[in-house]
Every structure is written in structure tokens, then in C-alpha cells.
Amino acid sequence: MTPMSDLMTQAELQRSIEEAVQRTAVIDVHTHLLPASFGPLCLWGIDELVNYHYLVAELFRSSPVTPQQFWALTKAQQADMIWDALFVKNTPLSEATAGVVAVMTKLGLDPTQPDLKQARDYFASVTVEQYINRVLDLANVSELVMTNDPFNPAERVMWEQNKPCPERFHRALRVDPVLNDWGTAAAVMAAAGFNTSPELTVQTIREARRFLELWIARLRPVYLAGSMPFTFTYPDDSPRTRLIHDVVLPTCLHHNIPFALMIGVSRQVNPALKEAGDSVGYADTASVERICAENPGVRFLVTMLARENQHALCVAARKFSNLMPFGCWWFLNNPSIVEEITAERLELLGATTIPQHSDARILDQLIYKWQHSRRTICRALCATYSRLMADGYPLTRKQIDRDVERMFSGNFRKWVGLPDDGARECAPHLVSCK
Ligand code: FIX
Ligand code: ZN
Image (cartoon, rainbow, N blue to C red; front, side):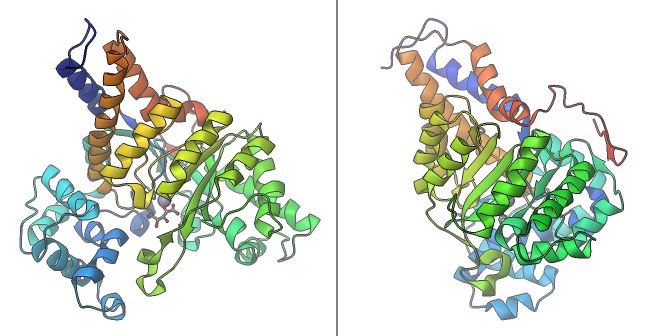
């Protein structure tokens, strides 16, 4: 039997952790959600949920349909096909299918129906404005960070028109084209009146910075972000290194905004699957160490896609206090792997990381992604605290609450400079919804 301290039995420990994890509101530090005022860019409801690209990838393993035939269908027909293949003719065992089951159950819908009629009727009866608050409450997410892409014309126009955005939807300025496809980024900037060229001249660098300045003023982002391929190497002779060094990092430093690096994608290994066609590769963690070492004044948020990179990322964070590992990204967001990574982080870094983000693209997903993550994080915490108590530490509930609060919101708040009460001066189009 495990020796326990006088203060808490194993059962009490388990209950205290569960209560803290369920009760503590989360700041979801990386999502792809957008506000209701962005109209069709705000994705919600059963047809979007079932058409999630994780499920599209799974469809082709269980149905003879070809990608070409699938993409020719309407969204509702696609959802019907996915429902039939993955939920009616198969047991929804995978994490992404189980997630849909969890959402439906939470909303009082029957996940064993032969079709989507009941679910469609339910969603036809609610408005998105009501539903956003319901989902945030059910998921116990107090604030979230969007992915805001000024290179996406459909999204850009929403910001240019000052569409209202709830203050608890924080902005993240996504700069992928600047770092991964400079030709396209330069053309977008030039079309917006900036003097940029495909060559990285002194003027182009200055203008690229001016473009970021404009978007920082418009969005007031909590961080700048880029998704990097698994081949990401820093520094190297590429335009990417030059643009990170001369444009992104000086901008982050100037505004005291962190830079988020999401490293490890192998884009479009199967282009026929479109958004579902990306994969994963093993990346170079030494590049993360070098960029942190060279830029002690910049705070980095880093997530890596390969399971094999997680240990070295933790070790890097022990060496560089300007490095914050966050989330179990995309293909890692499965209970078995989240539990392993969370345990590894607790062992190497204590409570100084951000264990999870949702990456939700569809509002409803917040419900299952946080339900599943909370359940798994609970297990990892339980094992860690049990060992600590077995070593003779008189753990208290207050300490558990404090640790969970740090991991769910406090660490991020500090990293990006958000005040404790979430209140920040509002730009006119950023309205408080508290
Ligand atoms: O680059 C990213 O932010 C990725 O998370 C997404 O683009 C990816 O498609 C995704 O949805 C992963 O969960
Ligand atoms: Zn993402």
C-alpha cells in the first residue's frame, strides 16, 4: 500500500484533483474559432462538426468513396456520408469520432441515431450568439485565443470592417505566409499599398515590419504565431531565417509580444484530402534552443507535433526560461499521448507549462476537447501528486488549486501579459462580453 500523508487519503486526493480540474476555468491558448459577427467564418453546428478534417481523413479508411467524389458533394451530403460510415456502420472508437459523441451527449442529443435529423433540428432551434455562451460554459473556457490571418482575404475584410469581437476572444497574429511563402506574403502586402518585393531588400524588410505594425495596432494580439514544417532549422540561409531575424523577432521585442512556434507539420502529403492531407515529421529541437539562446528578450511559446520531440522540448525549457512549451497538438491530442506528455512535463518542468490547447475549429469542439483533456490531465496529476505524497510531502488542496490554476490560465496570462481579471482597455470594435 502507498504510504499517505495525514492530510489526505488517496480517495481525497483524487477527489481534490478532479474538483480543481473541473472547476478551474481554462484560457484556451490556441483555437481557430472566430466570433459570431464574422458570419460564415464562425463554424458551429452538427454539419461542421461531422465535417471536421480529422473525420474526413478517417472517412476514406471506412468508405470506398474517392476524395474527388466526396468533394463534389454539398456539406450536408458530406456530413451524411461521414455519419453513416463512421457512426452508423462503425463504432466511433477514434478520438475524433468519440469527440462528436461527447458533444452530442452533452447537448442531450442521441449519438446512436441512424441519421443527423435530430441533431439538425436542434441546431436549427438555437442562435449562434446563445450557443457560444452555452458552449463556453459547458467547456468551462473563460477566454480563448483565435488564429487571425491577415493574409486570408475573407478574414481580413472582417477586421477592416471593424466587426465586433468579444474581448474574451483574444487575437493571435498569424504570420505563416511571411515565413513559409514570402512571394505570396510580399504580393499581399504590395496589394495593400506596402512597398514590398520578392527580394528581401532593406526597404522590403522595413515595409514588412510596417505591415505587422498595422496589424498589431488593429488586432492587439496576445502573440505572433507561425506553423513551421518539420524541416524547420534556425538559423539557416533561407528567407525564413532572415524574416524571423529581421522582421518577426524585432517586432515581438518592440511590442513585448511573445512569438509562438508550432513546429513539425509535413504539409499536404496527400493533397487530394485537402485540409485533411497534412502529416507529421520529426523536427530539430536544437533550433528551438538556438532561437531561445539568441533572443533572451523574446518569450517563445512552442508546441511540437511529433511525439518524439516532446522530451527534448522539455529539456530545452529547463535550459531557457524564455521558452514555454504548450499543448498537445493535433495528432498528439489523444488521451494516451496527452497523459504521457503531461506526465513528462510535470516530471521535468513542474507546473511551469501550458498543458493543453484545443485547436478547435468548430465551436462545439470546445466541449469534447476540454472534457477529454481535463479527464486525462487529472490522471497525470493524480499519479504525480501520489508519488509526492508517498515521498512524505504534506500536500494541501490549496496547492492543488494553485497548480491547476497556473497550468490552465495563470502561466499563459503572465507569459502574454494579460491582467488577472482579464480586463484590458477595449479598442472600439473589441467589446466586453463578460
Ligand atoms: O496550423 C495550425 O494551427 C494547425 O493546428 C491546423 O492548421 C490544423 O489543420 C489543425 O486543425 C490541427 O488541429
Ligand atoms: Zn491550429
